[in-house]
Amino acid sequence: MEKFEAFDFFKKQKDLFFEKFIRGVRERENDFKRENLINILSPGRVNIIGEHTDYNLGLSINAAINKYIFITGYENKTDYVEVFSRYLNDSSKFSLDDITFDKTTHWINYIKGVLKEYIQNGYKIGGFSMVVDSNLPIGAGISSSASLEVGVAKFVEELFNLKVDRKQTVVYCNSAENNFVGVSCGFMDQFSVAYGKKNHVIYLNFKDLSYEYIPFDLEDNLILIINSKEERNLANTEYNKRRKECTDAVQLISKITKDKNISSLSDVSLNLLCELENKIPEKLFRRVKHVVTENNRVLLSKEYLLKGDIEKLGQVLFESHNSLRYDYEVSTEKLDYLVDEMSKIKGVYGARLMGAGFGGSVISIVKKSKIDSITDIIGGKFLKKFNVSPDFIECSFSEGTRRVKFKDI
Ligand code: GLA
Image (cartoon, rainbow, N blue to C red):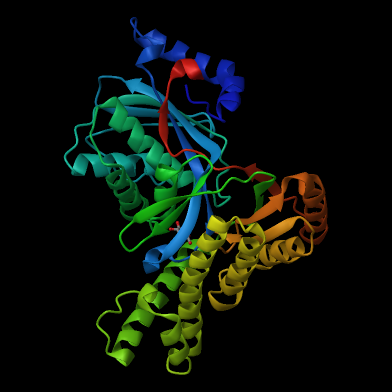
């Protein structure tokens, strides 16, 4: 039997959570059996490198992590879906005949959006009752939303015996976020959550969603996420602006080069990049430069990972941060401070902002033995400067979204 890192976490919650849920279920269904529950464990994700490359059809290296959203539930034989979020202590009920955007209960839209995708694509889905819990912090940039989407998708696939290819699940979840929730993200988050593999990272090409697993045994090291707790206020508007700048740049570059093969910034080579300097507006050039060099950094990182050269990999992470800071301009004072301070500490291989930017978290690779001193130094300095204590999240690489047996929990 497979061992799941999150079991301990959920075991501790058992009395509070499962027993209460099951009692509620028993009141309604005399013949209720624990075995009727479908349980899903859906991880968060980290992005090792390859930021703002997904919607530019480029490359990235990411992984699912051992922090999860947990979903349990059963078919209730009605036309209604009822969901209780134990994490948010909030609930919602809606009819499957009337799936509309909920302006007050924001989190339910991730679930509604996924269900709508499946229904629109002809899958038969009935009513169900579901409880959601989590140890994935919201807003930390480790994709709690993608984790919930893929978790819910897997839940309905299992509950109603739907045969859906995993890539298609990713596409449905991504479409739910873009078209129902209204956040225009690329494929990175949903893909990493669905395809994670223990002790491996995923080398992903967004041009065709082809991927390779690369073993990454952290051994004496770990992935440390530092959550600045800075709200990503601008994330949506600025993110969309960057996306538009990239599309504008593609048009301009294909006009200048008269090359019809340039359909995304990932078709721009390093040589062409050099030629473009002074031929396109300076700001646009920096955006292009980030994407082209970031793709190149992903290729280098892949090489270093295969060679087990963690020092060099760490250096590339710092370079990626500088590119995001100066060329793509998605960093903030707090994120820069964290990366700068991390770079001064022995035992830190590399660090950079992770995700869209404009707040959220920094990802770093650090020596396990140094973890206490690193968190002490950074926690202390950050508190003194910004009057906020950052959160530190240690993680390893885990399997993607999967069904788990109740007796194992
Ligand atoms: C957010 C989006 C992703 C990706 C990153 C930037 O996390 O959801 O699709 O674009 O930003 O790399």
